[in-house]
Amino acid sequence: MSGTEIHGREVVVVENLHKVQRAACEIARECSRDEFSVKIIVVTKTHTVDSINPLLAAGHRVFGESRVQEARAKWPVLRHRYPDIRLHMIGPLQINKVRMAVSFFDVIETVDRPRLAALLAKEMQWQTRWPDCLIQVNTGDEPQKTGVRLKDADTFIKKCIFEWNLPIRGLMCIPPLNEEPAFHFALLREIALRHSLQTLSMGMSKDFPLAIRLGATHVRVGAAILGDRDRR
Ligand SMILES: *Cc1c(COP(=O)(O)O)cnc(C)c1O
Image (cartoon, rainbow, N blue to C red; front, side):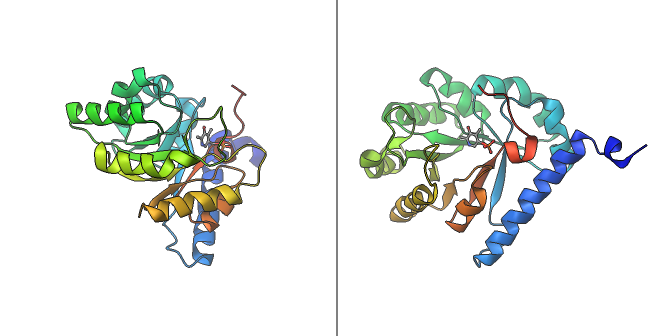
């Protein structure tokens, strides 16, 4: 039997994770940061429990999903086996999913509008459960995209912290598809510094090394670890 036959998909996925981890450590060191200061959020949207299992077996615990319903279908069984899983909500959050999101996720990265923020605050009080929150900033000021617009960002961040008392830990962005992301990462960092926020969730499979150089504390990596998704 040749080596490639026993070298299955499960092994490849874990190797990919280790590659990303090594790269993240190396870049952090180059930037004189703590080697382990960068958290890798493995983005598992569209991937099945079977593809996630080897990563859990290898010790990884931090994951991202972009749809509440899909996450609720996949993760309860895994959480039962691995209670220390940390699940990040990284997709647009609809008002009618707020209750479920508060009860289910450990981190909500996509707080981006007053109505959502107010409702999250109310729901957290009600459930006495306070998942960490990040504010998503539309750094490209794209009209169709989620995330608070740049001109509203400072006011919105202050209101989230001081009016709604949300547990805001930092900021998140998804740069426009066809633009050089460096500008957007630098901008996000600048806004976070203005508000003394520590967490910066930025960088995906194609640009996470750059994001770390520009200060990312969390990178959200899907394809580079789990392989390509079907377009949806
Ligand atoms: C899908 C997704 C990612 C991961 O993208 P990859 O290119 O697969 O690494 C990161 N962030 C968000 C918000 C996503 O929806």
